[in-house]
Image (cartoon, rainbow, N blue to C red):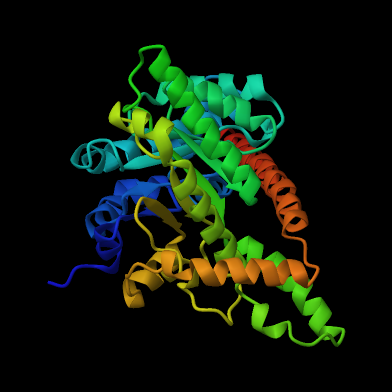
Length: 373
């Protein structure tokens, strides 16, 4: 039997994770089947839980139980999310064990309303870490100005962290350096550095959407020579981040941490579903394959990759072209810094909005179930 394209990615050192979770996926055995086909991790966010809760009756029992117990809406949501995350961690635990703790993680995000609250983020993350109580849990924390110091604290305490909403190269560098500093602090304190795992989730497709929009507006206004730049900025930006990764996870300090058992903080390519129908539906997979990376695949992208993905190491071959494209973009007067700043603000707001809709859905479901009961 031929090896799946997902397993072929793992053979090249890249871990395919699945950007979806639901009670039905877990109870039907779908998640276990995905694991067996090569999926090595799961990510979640408020939008994913909102879709899962609003579109299913699978959560009715836990919602009704929480409502009868007098729990507030957020507590009911956390109860059902934590149950899903625990069960998903258990399904992925064999991957965690087989890879000696390098893979098999499931991510749970702190409340998006804490994006500008360092202490609140730390408290929320500590509580989730303790309640879920699984070694293959990762807590998602956004890479905002307030999120980065929270990330440092959590990593120093030994909490696995999925750093999310990374768009800018400078922000990525700060996050990677924060990870190294946190492990150095653990080592200095005599704590185990090998038990901590982290990924830096660098968002991809949204960068093309924004950059292409700016370029297309100028093309439509009559400027020439810009057409060849369309659809290249997101991959170039991600490749630049990987170049920074290679620089940061090298040198004397890192080698000393590595000798003590430390793992690299892998780049995770997020938002890899193709939003422009003119581009390949596996564009943000096939162009970003490199060792010690993760690609978190939405269901449609995972299915497309399994159907016609061809796995080969591509990312490092694209480094020269990526550098040239980013220089060309800057020369054309398109500010990538402006784009990534806007995307971070929009991303924080989008997750907060999805979280509020999620709580509204839970409250509505609770009211209806109580009335029915």
